[in-house]
Length: 288
Image 1 (tube, rainbow, N blue to C red):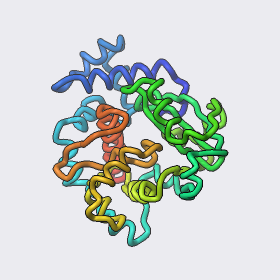
Image 2: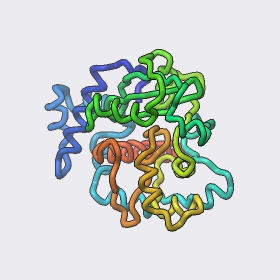
Image 3: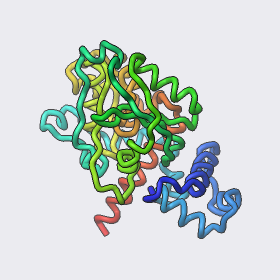
């Protein structure tokens, strides 16, 4: 992710390229992609690699139909061990977000009454992102590339019907830059989880899945002490309001199927592909 989140032109070029890749049944050749973007192959490859972390060819390998099954085989995380040893994820994202806080059950039951939530729209590697936060931290992230901006806004504001919402992107920008990988960020950003107690237990379990790894709904249920509550876990995963940072996209079905995703399956596939590409890139750089 480039440092400058306001680079609208390059963001939309890469977003269009990812949409084209995702819409195809088979691989798209570099020359064809570059032509459709109005660029030379060399320029487009450099730009794509800068934003996504790997080449277009490598990125497409992470979007194959068997990618989820390979993730389960190669990058499965045993959450019970992680929680028993008080470990969080080892990826850079979790190093940046070491602190999170949950709203008390009593306050949650009031529907956000007395709470001021600030919001703004931002570009991200996964399309337009609606980010919301209180003075305690980020409490909502939604992606609008599939749902549309109006639906994303209605969705997140409905979570806390009694809260007061203020448009204030500037107050959130530093946290957002950290969230989407800006290298110039000099501060940490907290997460403020607003949900029912059972939901928060599920979201805390999700936070312990390292970047580039996945788990299953049944594994999450076992890890939080409710092994038979797989369906309830799936519902809680789907109600996660802080997408990406509370990584509900890392929860898969036991069969290896992606399952659903609140903001659209193309977004989930892009999230997993981006993380998988970054993880392999970091491993290669370390070995090299």
